[in-house]
Length: 348
Image 1 (cartoon, one colour):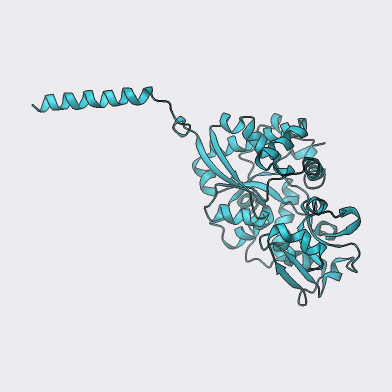
Image 2 (cartoon, rainbow, N blue to C red):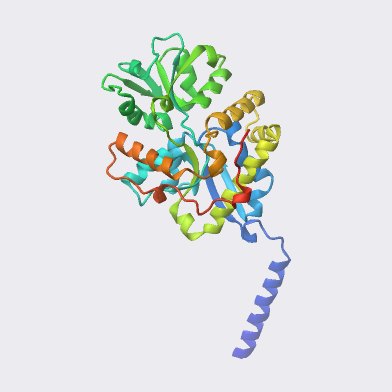
């Protein structure tokens, strides 16, 4: 009796398996690793390489199912990965340094450093009497609370010798920044040079005539900026996924350099209302200004100069009076970079 029941149960199970095998397999069942990624900002020209990596099938080739969300600032991206809301972020490595100095167990790790020049700035109207960093004293400034330049302002103030006691800082949504400056509701706004430059252009301003930039790099803050960072758990538990992700993004950058119009079209697929001409200008300016450090010819995109990177860590720690100095391998690793023959050593 028992043997008969077992036999019938076995036949029933075998039949169910046969039916299941005849059904189409969903993508997730095909074994892809799902990753959630948050970008630094809205969908714009300088996000094109991520979209080309997706559209050209490079994530698929790596066995990845990647979803990408717009961000609210380069500093915010770090916190969202640290908090577990995202597996991957495109964020500011200086915000990562600050987090690693205070909460090392939460801090993500940068696996592909993309912006190797400091883009941080305070933008003021060209007609104002603010001409130097010291002239920011006693002024009303503003920016998004999560903005990378705003988060670095205490460090910049210390390096540039700015007395911040009389400075008022107003927080507002990122999309209001250029209008707040244009309408003179604030005297200066925090941000990345090219983000402000081209957003101002979209708002009807001429950034070359109407805006003056007080740039952190001009005062000795030789910093890196945005990179691709992942949670330490993902790096430890699924290193192949991280390697595949980085290699796919690297291929997306290569495709962007080959055909910038196709790159901008990839952005437009996600954000149909963009001005393609301006976003192409923004993309080129980002390649030149944020990513075009001379070290690129030696290190390749995604890698860093260890000596310069260590100095950048020390600068951020000292200027922010952080409790400890993270080791370089707490912030950045070369373990997931693409093979040297695939790395990019020239942008334009």
